[in-house]
Amino acid sequence: MPCFLDHSAPDFEQAFTSLLNAKREDSPDVDAAVAGIIADVRTRGDAAVIALTEQFDRIALTPQTMRLSAEEVAQAAGEVPTEVRAALETAAARIRAYHARQMPEDAAWEDEAGAKLGWRWTPVDAAGLYVPGGLATYPSSVLMNAVPAKVAGVGRLAMVVPTPGGALNPAVLAAAQIAGVDEIYRIGGAQAVAALAYGTETIAPVDKITGPGNAYVAAAKRRVFGKVGIDMIAGPSEILVIADAANDPDWIALDMLSQAEHDESAQAILITDDAGFGRAVAAAIDKRLETLERRAIAGPSWRDYGAVITVPNLDIAAELSDRIAPEHLELCVADPEGLSAKITHAGAIFLGQWTPEAIGDYVGGPNHVLPTARSARFSSGLGVLDFLKRTTLTQMTPASLGAIGPAAETLAISESLEAHGLSVRARLNRLND
Image (cartoon, rainbow, N blue to C red; front, side, top):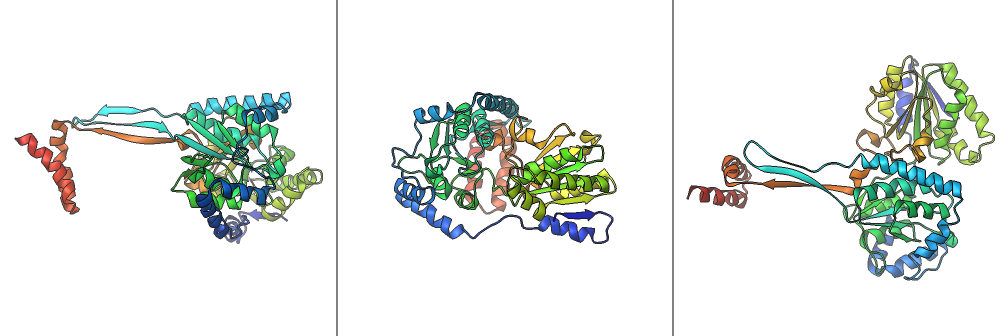
């Protein structure tokens, strides 16, 4: 059953630390297998990808059929019900508008020495989007990955999506169409990551790979990092709700189950200043689990990793939240803005009882690709900046080099880098001719 912790209990710190350190991820040792797959793709290209796709996804491809044609995409996307298409377009528009505000500005100025300095932002040339296939397919994730890339100005966006048994997901393809994905390949797994990173005869390599996947995909992303950029290594979903007794227990229960239903290793935690309310939420979760469609997933998640923590006040709730550094944080309290100001580490914060986390998954506007496993302590969710690079600009004049060049020469000499110093001195000497 889920754990119930009371901040006033003498063993609270030990129990809370155990909760933080509990290993939730099923991490089979797949690295050796992934290394072999990547090496095979690098050596044999299309042939390796085709063989591995037939082995794992039970679909026979050729170099000509790896990529979905525009006609296939249009036909599948056309099968999406009108209301679903409209919802995807609403979500895409809101995601696009939110991320457009993230675009940074170039800058240039002249400093007191007369040097001209600045920076400029440019997009990566090509990005690869990994989309999971099989039982769980998420068109919303296509939008969350592809729209920021396009807002950033990425010229080429290639999507890979496994199609077990050849089955296509119309909503995923409709989302790709709406977001402006340029190429779609019906491949998945570590072989798809390798193909995006190193290229094959059919698939041109990309500069950055984003998107979630299983343990093999995560291991492949780790291995290709450096050859290409990656977004993050995402773990199981998680939600922390801080709520007072002025909430409907069933609402909070549903919010927590919205993450528990993702994965048996997902985690839902409630922190409240009212022990009775905590018990009421737990009871509401149990009741909902009797009929929830994904109870076979949400049930084990709640049983094995769920928690209810009672605290004496919301200031302590904020302190505990920062230690958890949750992926998703709901603040269902009287003053959510005030409590939010006391919290530093969270992937995304949802303010007030009328803002369920599920809004953020679909149509809120901010990105739902977020740091997990306490990595919100040092990283951010996916955004436009993930698809941009900053290039610095420096221009010296004879006068500005004369002003600051001697300091550069001194530092070069102190580091025993003679040519560095001489490259500056040669110009300084010219100034004195």
